[in-house]
Length: 222
Image 1 (cartoon, rainbow, N blue to C red):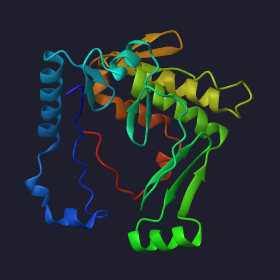
Image 2 (image 1 turned 180 degrees about the horizontal axis):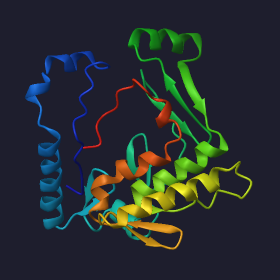
Image 3 (image 1 turned 180 degrees about the vertical axis):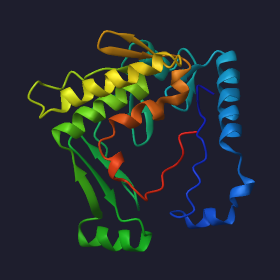
């Protein structure tokens, strides 16, 4: 195939009821899952594929591979893409729409969604992005797509302290040079092949909302 997506299984039985049929002891431990990720990387790289961001592989002539070489890869709710700035309208129960300055989600229960469509509006929740959100969105996307950590071009000096906070976080990440995850070049960090395996961990410090998510269960980074 031109492209392969190798997602890790996210076990969230608290949110996804049918996953409760799978017992925790039946699942591989984090060390085993990491070994599976390494195996996938070795196999697909050995077959000539380019490693794309978190969990994709593509042949050299594929659009995603070309986008990686040209530092213009992007990521949205559907996965990796070579198109930036595409606004998406989500159709169907629970689907998410993405726009430049907001996210919106449709009602998750099909029957309720259908009734909402007939009444004229299926969207039931969303988030309008602040300037801080948009700056962090571009930074995290650049990190997860193009393996570069830097202050985005869209960030002006009047960005309400965001630029200063982001630069401080970038400085903190320079410590990962010792582990071989990043290579500093002035105010810019380049993510190494090893660091690519830990993209989520490198991105988490830039998530301004994460410290307030006490008690919320997420899929594991490894």
